[in-house]
Amino acid sequence: MNLNLLLLAGLWSLAATGVGRASEPAAEQPNQHPSTRVSIVGEHWHINGEVTYRGAKTEGLLLNARMVNATFEDRHRPEFDPDANAAEFVAQIPDYVAHGIRAFTLNLQGGMPGYEGALNSAYDNDGSLRDSSLRRMARVIEACDRHGAAVILGCYYQRQDQVLRDEEAVRTGVVNTVKWIQSGRFKNVVLEIANEFGHGGFHHRILKSPEGQVELIQLAKRTAPELLVSTSGLGDGAAHENVAHACDFLLIHFNSTRLEDIPKRIAALKKYGKPIVCNEDQKVGEQGAKAADLCVANGASWGLMLEKLNQHFPFAFKGAADDPAVYAQFRRLVSVQAASDTARRIKP
Image (cartoon, rainbow, N blue to C red; front, side, top):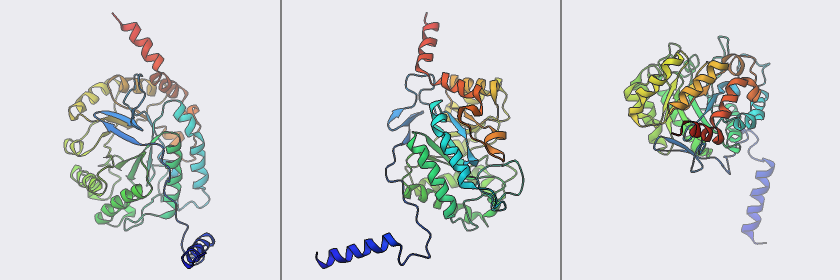
């Protein structure tokens, strides 16, 4: 063996034993073999180059579920096991996907856990990212990837943005998040700058105004032009014009929108020529099933938020048993046979 090979073997040995790096945290390896790639063609969603749900009523759409507290931690509750919580969600991903889900909404600052005072942020005060939070998030994203699901990854959440010391830290957080997505080779991730920007629970102006959202969307796009980026508004299903123009796809919420108003809310957004995704609606049971049907019939994707079960502590993830009526409706909507039967019934 020549000298160069001996030196290389020595370096491999050091790396394997961790000598010289004992004080450093173990680095999370990038997603070496991503299997799920999400993209947009026109107004249609594609996964791995194929339109979603080909031949079904949902063709080109992205049925989704809000699971922002699947990666929850509360640094004020040391007795809570965030990794076990994430593992419970991961175990149910195959069942959610089997019932038609093609995207999960996650968030680096989680969501309202049903009580005030939680400290749940993947960001430190300067916009840097916390390794323990990233490792957990990476495991969940990679699990979604293995099962053919996209991730709508949010950066900021009301009640938690106060962790960041100023607006420059908010900007830094966006850049760091985008670079982390790139370094992890997460091709199944699209970005949501803020959950319900303008919400009274936000502290920083940049997360309250349309102008601030446009700035952050453009910042993310400059950092990674290939990344699909959006942001979500409040529960009325509306989108600010400047924000809609800046986004790659439109993220809306229907929490406070009546069923009968859903079609006209969607119709008002068609002029932008972009995919329309509701990724939060608190309607459940038969009401949720009807909301999903109305969205799909009008060319928009719908997302279920089970606030009391999936988002409020103690969190539970039971697959389709979370809401049998809604998940049964998802199965019907993504069924090619159901679409064929409908076509036969209305054929003149």
